[in-house]
Amino acid sequence: MIPAKVRAAMNEQIKHEMESFYIYHSMVAYFAAQNLDGMAHWMRCQAHEEMVHAMKFFDHILERGEKVELLDLRQLKTEWSSPLEAWQDALEHEKFITGKIHDLTKLARDEDDFQAEPMLAWFNTEQIEEEANADRIASQVEMVGENKQGLLMLDKELAARVFPAGSPLDPAAYTAASA
Ligand code: FEO
Image 1: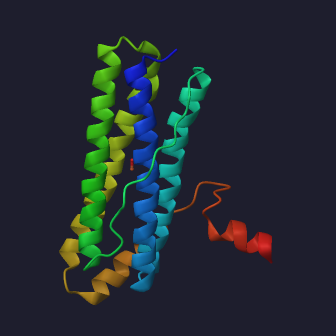
Image 2 (image 1 turned 135 degrees about the horizontal axis):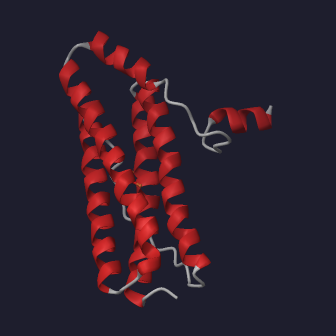
Image 3 (image 1 turned 120 degrees about the vertical axis):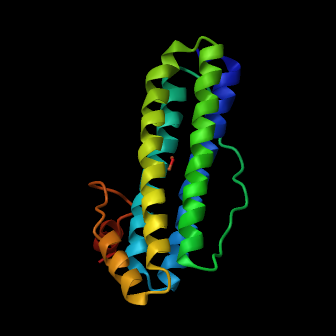
């Protein structure tokens, strides 16, 4: 059993993680349209992680015999004026998610929901990496500024991120299947 307030907040968190998946795909589309294929690839890998985050909460609620409720997603931004603006938004979005995880952790403590603690501890640790990644890349994009060659070098570096094995978001998964 999950305390009602905690269960409601966990269902809200599924929504926030799904929104992360969604907004990062908007960024994939934006970067691809700018011919920044490495950034598009990096963000697609990130979107995979966001779906995993949503499913961790999804499974946790089900395993404890409670009801998963999928809520409406917010209307999210779909255009950016520059790659820097997109990366800065990614960082702000991760800070927003960290705040939500902190709120959920405090609520679980207030409600004596000890069984939620291990999962929430995982998310608190994960958010350190999530913010650090977005912060590092946003800072690097800011550093290269108007230097197109620098931007292309960074883009190439970000293309090296590897999809988790078997990810359905990896184009290799569905282009091979439809070949
Ligand atoms: Fe699910 Fe990027 O936090």
